[in-house]
Image (cartoon, rainbow, N blue to C red; front, side):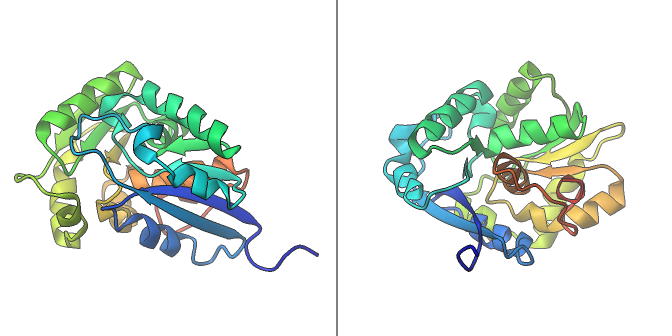
Length: 239
């Protein structure tokens, strides 16, 4: 007989200003008692243009490694504009440190779009339009055609993004739902769009890939414990 409690241990590296990662993940996994999720925090670099690497992550991966993980995820989307290829290299470095398969939110979104056969997308990004344009260019390298972009009118800090209510989040999301799309992608793991995915999918009839939900979807896949989890959109429901 195995030890009591969760038999699978997942590790998530969380930016220190992110208050969505733990709470959303806990809500999604509330009825999955075999899964334990463990977190380690780090400080993001001051500029959005800075690449997150092992130097930025510091002791966080090694401390997670002490928990004997089955998979690990970097819960951040900076690779969506600084480079998916760089994020895949970070995954390899994390695997070397932690001895477990690794992903990032940016890699998870791309993998999720592939799983959904979604090439034409709308993009929701709670940051500057200039960064959204960089995401559009980066996605095009990977065969993803961003046909609509929605960003907020005013710049917000990460804590301000987390404090947006459902109405404000919905107002940011709606302009991204253009005609003829395969999916809409919400980039930004502190944007609480995950809670709105199910309702918006029912309204618009296309999948929504929320970066925080995609991170969990992919880390479950890497850990070898995929399963359908209803109530959080097409990506998790079809796992």
